[in-house]
Length: 221
Image (cartoon, rainbow, N blue to C red; front, side, top):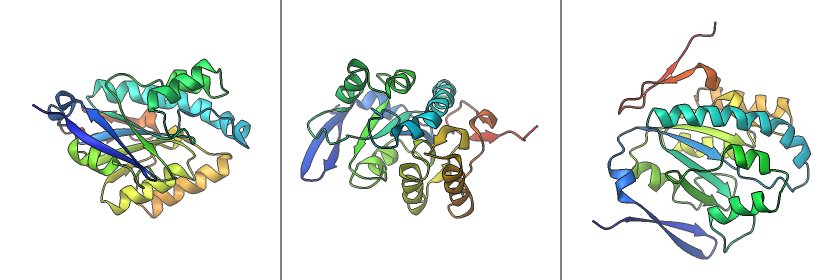
């Protein structure tokens, strides 16, 4: 059986990534974990400010990823390509680690597994000029768990576009980070109040582990 081809569009470039049909055709889970811009060299202006919040966020995302994986929920990395138009995602991961960039500890915490998916994006939203919606449809996803940085930029833009496409949205507040706590909290409040998304901390989310991928929000003790 032929593989499914997804086209990644970056400006005037068309890149074909082959996704093994064996991974997708057997997946009946209706939820996906989306990790946004955590594979990051952290070599930009104000990176120190973001890194302070992003490292503990990465630890929470790593724990969440282990639990979603156990429940059969796929992981999709949505990442900037940082101007490396001729690189693929594995090369970006290798560059950050091999060059010992500031973001190396985060990248090592969240290093993608072979079964994970990735989408490279040219702008803030994970949906803009990317095949993310097509991939989610192919995986039969109805609910997205959005995590990553920055909470008030790329995560928020992606949540806006997910809402416009009628996805159910979870954005665990302990799995996002911005340059300041106040900026992140403001973004979370907008996601909760305007986009009707859940910002319940990841520690209070449990997963049934069946084919529905239903998420249970535990009451705050």
